[in-house]
Image (cartoon, rainbow, N blue to C red; front, side, top):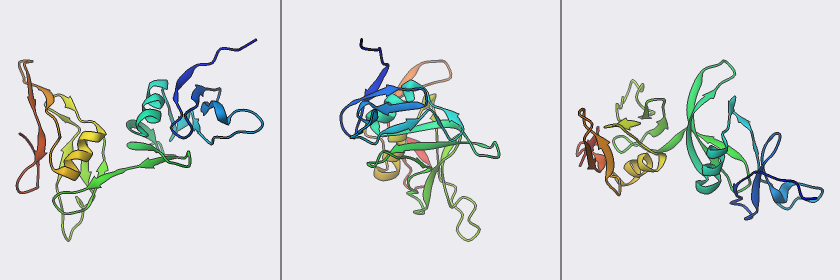
Length: 181
């Protein structure tokens, strides 16, 4: 008799089904006596319970920006989870290079910030707010701004009166701020 399994998505390493287990999420080819795949994602990462939908996005895109992780001391932080080719889940707080000074752009709770913000010798205040005009920036959009200086498509934003408008986001000519284009 075949038992029912909850399939979360496709394994990006081998193409098998990823199923929900009592301890997390596992490729169907990583179950049994002779596993041929290494994919095994814990249900709790960084003191945070993973949701099925989040794991599905991680499997599909291999990267996801999430909030609510916690250190051993209880301090919460956001990070990017990345599924490596060897099946490991990596926490990646850096998403790119600062277009102003070349420092690292790190994930913050309200913005993507330059790591040189507190550098006394060469401070940099460059930041990309995670919410601009009511639009929650995705990881891909923030990376695009860092790498290309502008988003490839217009983003839906909202005015105070609730009306919708669309603009691209890009780096200002002085490379100090984000502007709507």
